[in-house]
Length: 304
Image 1: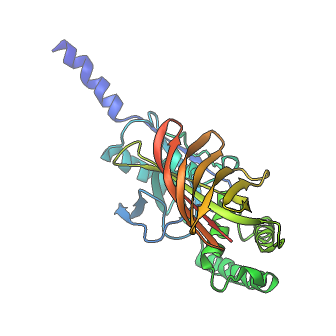
Image 2: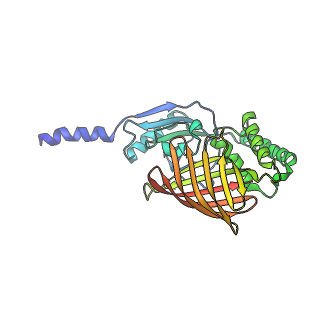
Image 3: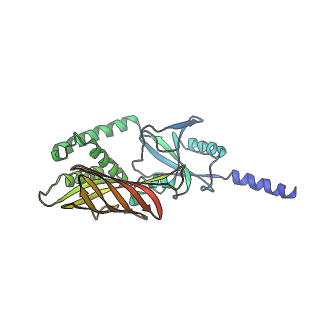
């Protein structure tokens, strides 16, 4: 009995670790996901992934031992903390989930990779969202008129990848720096040197690692790459100024491209064989990659 007398208070302390709320004042565009689902708890929407509409992060909440599993008591206390600090929603996630959406330089470092915490959010006002959307429509019209070779009327996927690329860099597309970077990207893609065998492409790489069958992790990479073709031989090399490094060497036969790829950004590095389809404006490649000694599914899309 003496053993239980000492053990029960210890168990109680483990289950009721205090929470820490840290205000966040950084300015950036946060990831959204169409069709996201939430659970209403005590009047607050709680997401296990990214919300479906624009928001700002106002604070982070972590357990004293944030690497252990969350219980109902933890969620209730986190919601109380969030509401007391003016939050309108919560995103419960790991640091890795947020970090995977940005380049290493733009990583917000809300939590460490394996650490699970809650992000307190406020919705962006509808009028500001509408104004930003209107300005973006105007910018797209300007790009279409300035670079007709891009054929953006029929290539919404290229436009959308460009927007995602700017967000991955940590830039706001509704800013001078963001629009300048996107225009520079599109102008380099539109520029063609006939007979050189070289062209510029925008790429998006996705690595899906199966560390846990219940929660496989994804990491994204974006950038610009130069494609060089000499007969059947194709190489792809990312621009030196890009945060993500892409290197590919392979052969093209009957519109089928296959070869070996290396993709890295920061501490993350992936190598593997990859193959897929090739056209004048789109390349789609898939394969298995060695993701830091872990096998992962690899997908690479290039557009121009």
